[in-house]
Every structure is written in C-alpha cells, then in structure tokens.
Length: 187
Image (cartoon, rainbow, N blue to C red; front, side):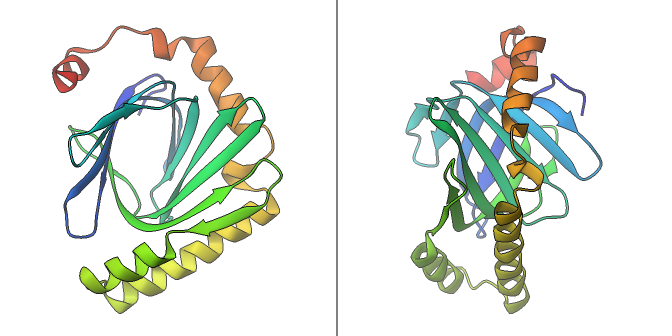
C-alpha cells in the first residue's frame, strides 16, 4: 500500500456479520507486517445502518501477525488509545477487513488503562462458539497488548500518533479528491 492511499475499513464479528464501516482513512505508513491509517471526521456506519462522524482526528495501527489493532485518538488534553482485540487484517478490492473479538482496552494520556467489554466477550464466545485455540490466542494477545502499553512501545511510543497525524495533514491526504471507487462506495 502506498502512502496517501484512501482505504475503507470493515469490522466483522466472528459469525461473519458486518459490525461497522469507516468510510475513509488514508495510509500514512505501511510495512510487511502492519499498516497505519489516519483520518479526521470520517463517517462510521453501524451494522444497523445508523451512522455518525468521528469527532477527533485518529491514527490506527493494523497488524498482520498480532490479534489487535490500536486507535490513537488525538484530543487537546492528550492522546487516548482505544485498542481492539481483533484478528489480523486482510485487504481486498473492497476494504481493509478484520474480525472484532469484543475485548477492548482504553488507554488514558497518563498511561493508565482499563480493560473493557469482558462481559460482551464472555457472552459472544459462548454464543458464537469460539474454539479453545482462538480463546487462548485472544487472551495471550490481550496480555501482549498490556505489556506494550505498560512499556510505552509500538503504537504507544511517546509522540508517535501525533507524528503520523502531522504527516497526514502535511501531505494533504485528507484533502485529496475522492477516487471513483471511493465515490461509488459513499453513495
């Protein structure tokens, strides 16, 4: 993926149902094992058809080998992170896609964090019959994510989200005209 490429992001649940769509984000960095997207005021469509627009700029890390993604939300009082325990991403002609596995971590600007949605995870793992090996992977990845947060590594490196967002603004990715494909998807 080239820097500046517009992307649509699709989130699914384990049963294959579409969970949420982010209509536009732009690639600000990519390597063999990750991609970083940035956006500001993007439209988010829920599986119910309800939609809303993000309020703050954000930078999101997706990984090919890790079962989580990380959203850095840039606010005047500091950067917050919202981390999803989720499958590694795939990209096809339609979108960047991943499966959301309910468990989340919210990280505050001071580095403290809360694990969220444990009850939702417990309910879904029974209802959707998550296999034992998947449950072990998800718990292991939750632990790995906590370690990155506590050590301020990876996406949690001081100033990294802000640096990516500056690149996004400086390069004008957000101001580029929509591609024909993006226009068709937004109608």
